[in-house]
Amino acid sequence: MRKNMRLFVLLAIPALILSACTTTEKKEVLDMEKVRVEIQAMEDAYSAGEKAKDADAVALYYSDDAISYSRNRQPLSGKAAIRDYIANNIAKDTTDNYNVYKVVDLYAEGNTAVEIGSWTEFDTSGKEMENGNYMSYFEKRDGKYICVRDMSTTTSPVKSGM
Image (tube, rainbow, N blue to C red; front, side, top):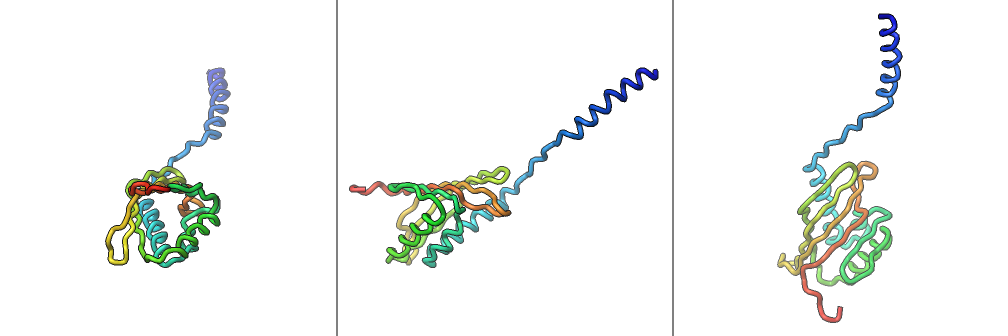
């Protein structure tokens, strides 16, 4: 009996040590509605920045290491390049048209999220001028989502000469 008890103790101690060393990772369950609201608020702020012709406000959407892809141009690397591109477009704009961005699909896990959205351009009377789609990849940094990659398209046909 004593021998069995000693054997049990000898086997139990390493088992306890090993079980203490292993950690069970508890997956965080994301509140997808909360994530959707946060991402839509970012899209609304982006739109408001464009409408106010404030490139700095629009650029707040992006991380310093962001890359932005769009039709008929090379990717823009870095928040500064993206901001400069936006500022250039704002300076050339004489239409006062504005864009509305809408979250269509959202996928999130851990500290990342992918948004598939639609955009619509309106003139000052509210008439739809153009529309398209976009995809943005976000990482949660310092407690909030920030765009690190985005890509957009238009549903308009390619104009000749482009």
